[in-house]
Image (cartoon, rainbow, N blue to C red; front, side, top):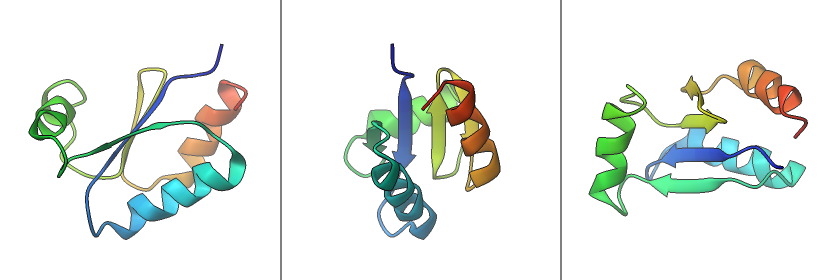
Length: 81
């Protein structure tokens, strides 16, 4: 089973775009939740994941706040992605 990955983004967020390119270049499937497209995404990000920044990446319920490529690689390797 593939790991569940959620990527919280917002418009005009260069680190968000870099993470999307990173995922796309590696064929990693993820669900993008753009805060501008749905107000519930922002609420979910703040309440459920205790984050106020984008990108925030959720890999199998493990949270990466901000642009942390080393931690992202660590979690992708952990889940064989």
